[in-house]
Length: 388
Image 1 (tube, helix red, strand yellow):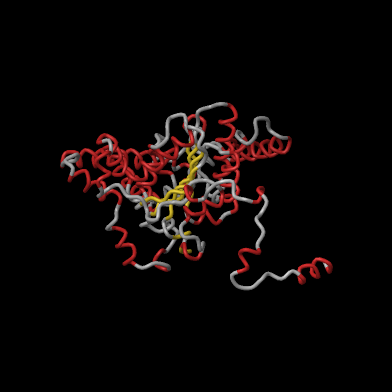
Image 2 (cartoon, one colour; image 1 turned 60 degrees about the vertical axis):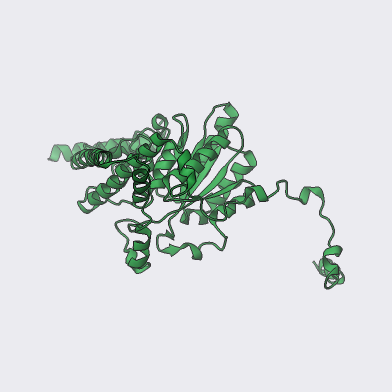
């Protein structure tokens, strides 16, 4: 250490203009392997609604996006009501974020995989999952209420960002096997502060895995605003450090989000590697039903974002283009109400649960400890039954 300090103290950089000329050219191995300029995201969030670009959108896609947004808004309202009725233990609403949820589901092919966060039950439902199964975890009945392989939807879980490395692993494995599969992983802005986010993006870029990362930047990680999480120009700019392209999109513009995600999925499927997409959106409701959002944000801020509501933005565009009339609005609302009524009816029925199922899906072959625990529980249940 002494010799190093002595050597460092004897080397003096010339002052002023001579400094740049003095610096040696780093050897090739130190140089960036990729020109960062093409990886930089848009200067402003990409928008399609209200621009000339919307004329190129498929009318049938626009109508489908609208129906899914209306259904998603009603799903959020019904699930929130179920928490107040005690039918759900907790519900993290995506009211205001429906465009991101729906676009993520519709951008994928049937063979692809969706890796949702705990807030993304709507994305799972838009992909075709039974709403009751999507809410089973939040009801406290099962760890996962559906077969992930059947639906190509990874298990919903509450740990932050842990689904991201899983998505990379699946996508990389699919590529090694020669399967034409893309994984789309969803995360909130708070999740980008987790180590799993860094590890997932680094591995994805090095392996050129066919995976798309969608960050729903809704402004707050529970009560922590984005400015207290990162000093980056945008979360999409973080992509450059890993060697993948970043995209910045208006997360309340369903058409723009669908376009950006579709392009990223197509790029990944063709061997172009991963993409990081940041969608700027807003969580209208509280973090969950257990949160008091008034403690960290004002009503004026919420009302400002209500004017940029994803459902109203698309409805206005479709109406102005003659693609939606009163009958179309009524049909979408009735379809959504039918879904909500069925969800309400089924969630109001008490589930029949077998406590022994605790041991049924842990390992393919039960360990000695699990067999011992299962026998103990069975004995307790039998004793309770005899006593009752």
